[in-house]
Length: 122
Image (cartoon, rainbow, N blue to C red):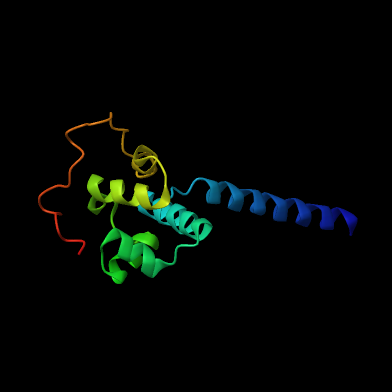
């Protein structure tokens, strides 16, 4: 019986290893990563969601979608990231990198919102 138990044990361990490997290879959505980071940062600063929305000058629902990671990364433009960075006191380029974008040089002219997104967050 000991031999059968050992075979069963080895199969269970092999399945656990497969599950662990699968879990580590699932890519994290950049917007969800940013949202999780922002939630943690706001929690550390003691800033509630409604205050975050107010400081960001957006509606609460929009802030919730952003913080929950449900806003598409393509809809999070650089001007918005700049405001968020000021609120959570982090370098804007750190937030850009979290979204899978390259860092911008200081004073980069491309640091503006696309015309199609301007004003849509209010």
